[in-house]
Image (cartoon, rainbow, N blue to C red; front, side, top):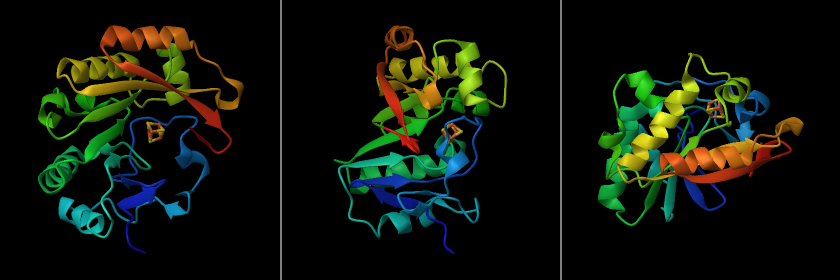
Length: 205
Ligand code: SF4
C-alpha cells in the first residue's frame, strides 16, 4: 500500500511526514488508533522525498490552510518540510501554512532552526502539555531530559521571529486536569497565544 503523506480532514489538507517522535504522549492518537477518520497514517516507509509529497499534494484541491501534522513529529523531517512549504508558498501564496510540533526541533538539530522557517511557516502550534516539567514528563514521556525547557525555548524562538505561535495543552485526559491559568501565563510570558484542547473520547478537540 502506498504511503499516505497527504490527507484531508474537515476541509483542510494535512501533511504526514513521519511516524517518528521524540515524545510518547499518553494521549497520542498513535497509541490507540491506526487511522484518523479512516485515513491510515502509519507509513510503509520513511524513505521518501519532498517531490513525493508534492506529487500527492497535487492530487488535492488546495484549501486555504495546509497543516503539517500526522502520526509523528513533522520537524524531524525539517528539510522535506522546508522544501514542500517553499513549493506551496510559490504556487499557492495565499495558503496559510501551520506546523503542529512538539517543539523539540532546536534540541534535535542543536541549532535554532526557526529563522530558517520564517517566510515559509505562518503559524506554529506547539504542545506545551503542562504547567511544570514534572507534569510535562508525565504526559509527554519525552525521550530526553530537560524537554519542557526546550519546548518553552522553542515557543520563544518562534515569537522572537514574529511568527504566530500558539502553545497548546490537552486538558482532561482520562480525568487528569492541568493548571490552565498557569499554562496560559507561561504562554503569554513567552509571547504566545494559548489554547486548551479538550480531551474527548478517542481524540481531542
Ligand atoms: S508529540 Fe504528537 S506525535 Fe509525538 S507522541 Fe505526542 S501527540 Fe504523538
